[in-house]
Image (cartoon, rainbow, N blue to C red; front, side):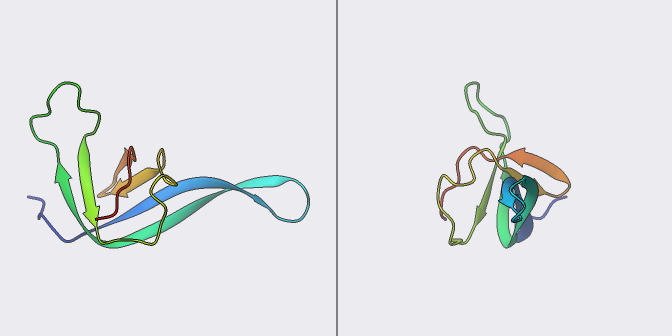
Length: 86
């Protein structure tokens, strides 16, 4: 059985970086979330567009900057729909 908390996760997204050659390269950036709480959605209602929530303490990141990025937790990858400070 999965314990309720604390859990660790990672936010992964890709960005283009210019290394000075004028040709942008794609690089994957990883942000570690050392402690948070994973809540799976049990008995989802129709029309709900998320499969789980991951709560963590406030990170100094912008609210909409990571929409569409990936949250990796326990070997499973989730799409980030909305990122809110907790």
